[in-house]
Length: 326
Length: 262
Picture 1 (cartoon, rainbow over the protein chains, first blue to last red):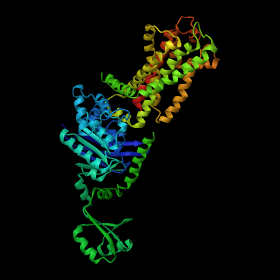
Picture 2 (cartoon, rainbow over the protein chains, first blue to last red; picture 1 turned 60 degrees about the vertical axis):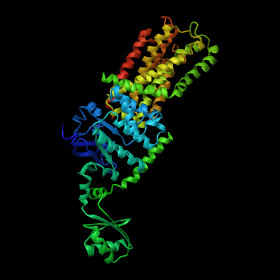
Picture 3 (cartoon, each protein chain N blue to C red; picture 1 turned 30 degrees about the vertical axis):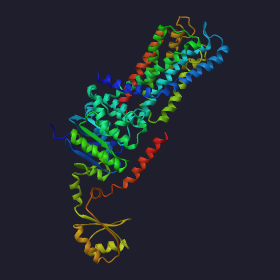
Picture 4 (cartoon, rainbow over the protein chains, first blue to last red; picture 1 turned 180 degrees about the vertical axis):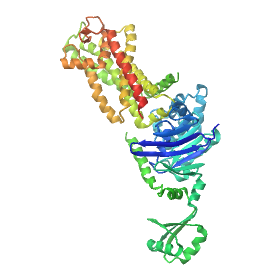
């Protein structure tokens, strides 16, 4: 066997003038949970679409489970499972019928079909609702049904494009339990895109992608070490004066935003007591934390991934609304 | 073999959907029956016989069957656009099923539903005073299916290039009603103005409707319901051939177009 199950080399995708994916290369090992982290429009979904044969690369090569995504589309499709960002269920059919269709489409042998359908439905706790029309399912149930469907043909690689977008934290946690259990049981490789940082934290390795380029690729822990230092946020009476004093007294350049000042120090625990005692401007609040993926992202790309979150939640809401209206 | 399986899978889903939605059957035969009984009863006495022993309702009956089949098979296209808008098309497109099989499966699914609906209309024959022998019915089934496949693949072809439900419905209205009105569903095509005569002969549905009528009301060479194309009186088999060629071109185009869309 190869030591990789996905191999991407110099992949480029252009839409007219726009370069959505800009010459990226990486490999994913079997059984790995590989996370693609980046803001919306960074090229995550475009890359997935190429890997799952929905879209053709402008140049470069991608191999999934030993098959070329352009020349061996059928074999690639047979090897992968997908949970899309947007729902892709037949709402008019029951959960069971959706899975039946999938089993037929993916050549799941008739002898094991019923048993496997039952297995994935029970795993996702949907067995009792199997005969109900999908349009009566809640958002979380639909997502779970899509996961069940993605697993039905025992794919070698499961692509999860923002698998928990717009779901409540409780459902998100449950879905993650299933994903981890699946890797344990079936040895499935999981290729994930997300911009939830706690979610990315669960990956074995993360590739940070921004403006179509790979900015960094490593384990979550090592990515956080890029920041290297502890992070302190303070709110003061006069942030401008405080920034000035930080510069003069400690040679620290603080970032200013609406919430106050943020700066990095080698050891927060040692720095804070003396800082609070001797600082000349009245401190309203202090916060000390270890670096997160968010900080790593900020350091690497110069922008915050969270900024996207509001607009995304809004988008999800609009989508939901549009569906209800119909 | 794999392709056949793919076609079957796509077809199977459309049939499942049809069974789950019984109202659709009632809805789709309501309008044709309304035309048949309201216009048929209202106008029959006024119009007298349109052919030997054929009153207006009896004349219209084969046309109404054709119209039902045509309207229903056009839904193949609607269903593709619908699936795209609701996301299900993605599930289909990443499945190990060739795009050409998807196009064929969609067409055959809609054609099967159209065939069922057309057959339901056939059951009303006694009420109109049209007598059907078992042989006539047996001849009609493949004919309806051919018409449905031809029009269905035309719908799928359009759907590969039209992205929104609204746009598709607009195009459908623009195409479907002229196709129905100019195919001889409601009136004989003999003696219509020249411009209309030309349009009816360019209309593929005309050949389907005419053939259904020839099978139900008789296809003797002196039948008043035939088509004359460039001075040649088209036989039943001539009409079937025109329809078959149109259908073959459409389904090949639909398969091709489905494979090249993104």
